[in-house]
Image (tube, rainbow, N blue to C red):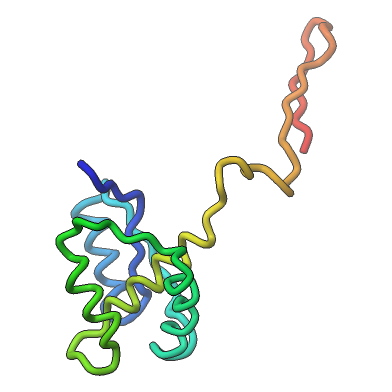
Length: 129
């Protein structure tokens, strides 16, 4: 497959919470995580991600079947029947921005070490933080 997902983020709302419960019962292998509803309205979410889009920091897959529809709904926000693409893009970008690059794993956190006692018979394993 060309596009593989590692998580599904679902907004913790009246419809989202039961959806995750059902998903975890019926398809436990599908990763799903509830996200707290964002503060402010759609207009504030749109303005908070606009700079990333306008500066070219968001890259779009050129041949994606959904791209034309998503572009239409995002560029005509406020004048269409559907506005969920904006929320989905906001949730995606916010979660990507929260991700830690593998190069930075452990930075700023104490490293856990396991020390094995100095060769004495019956030496114990001590864990240091």
